Length: 68
Image (cartoon, rainbow, N blue to C red; front, top):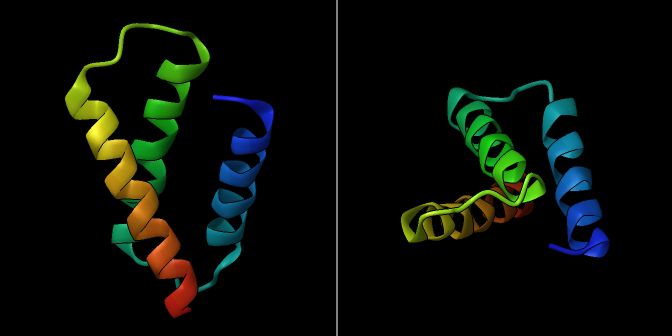
């Protein structure tokens, strides 16, 4: 993951955190995203299921952002 992608992720996470009406779904999306992000940062082995999950999370987060 390059710095540009990481910056986009951080901006999106910060935006969602600032929302006053953050529901539990968004909270858990951020939590899971953060865990997978830590794995990516430390360059540990990531199972394919986690990568698929990560892609779904980002898709959901972007959808949530657009809806709001």
